[in-house]
Image (cartoon, rainbow, N blue to C red; front, side, top):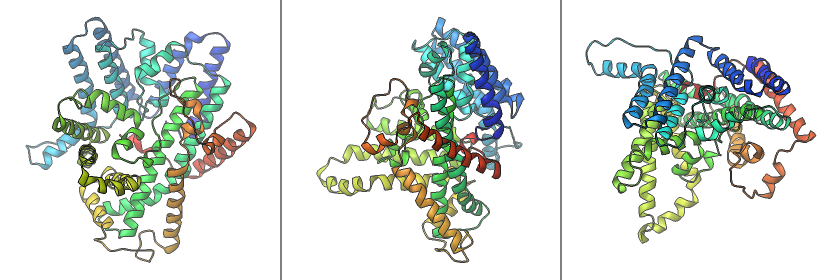
Length: 495
């Protein structure tokens, strides 16, 4: 069941809200957590009920391991628990990939293996690994089975994040979530914003991206103009798809009285690859930093080891996104960029390099966007051959193909329309305030207060008739488009 499906928007979500509201009215707050658990299991099992066995089995295994760690705090028990999670993820997500790799290398008579991937397995696995590590460290302890089950299965962030930390969300469950009018108004606004990003922006620009990437996968070599249009279109599609999903997840949780962590903060405005990862999928970056980079040694063992740890962290992060060598290469690309950035910080103060630092700072934002966009080729391409074809086209090795009959876009009109769409999206990407700046009520309670510029302050959401009217108009446009368009799929559901 997807957030942008009519069944969810007009059936599942209203029923859940009404049931929770009824329990509040009757003074049965102790039943809210069990009801949300049941709702989350229905939400998850709607696509394939059999995968409820995987989700519940994983949650029960980690809950019992957590109880053991609370009592004994043995390294062997932690290693056993983490190994169990890695084996579960490895079986469903990577077994077929490794078998195919061995077959391609001619190692034995290994049959092809195809295993359906349970939705959200990467996310709920990472969430629970973080919980286990912090339980071992003595940072947290959760003995209430129902609270733990809701922590793992909470439907707004179950399928594609944000990767909620136990310290952020478990205390909220202990206080019994509830529905109040202010939270519903805030959450509904953010939900509508996310829906518009997905349906009106991501899916629209994604049609152009699919045209170019599908052509490369089929062996067609796009011209320079088509290639860049398609790759930039995909950059914007992924941006608004993931930003829209994060907004919808945060908005839905807010309607139930739960604040999820912010997961997206205008990443294409980053002036370095390091800043990009502080703004893009922020909860994943936090996990990789806290539970992979630092345990590997972080920056405590000298510059060479620091660079190696950075590279390995992103390499593993790339493989986490997908079982394929293109994802490994994407992780290596970002790992290499982070290594280069760290090296640059080490040497940038040398007198001979200070002159070079000036133009780099001036063009830091477009340069970062360029490097990230090139990396998205590996992320989206079906295989190495398709990625190489597109990279060659972006370098002009397959001709230019400006808006002529030879263009993949078909006509000068279609090419111009795509260009206008990309220009409009660029304005939003680089100049519009992020959702959390527009609706500051979704920020976690401990977020430091910022002094916004006067323009942003005037744009901030308020519970007024004007903003209600704007939200209603946006919702009508998005829902109408949703019913008229074909099936929508969030890109991050694939990972």
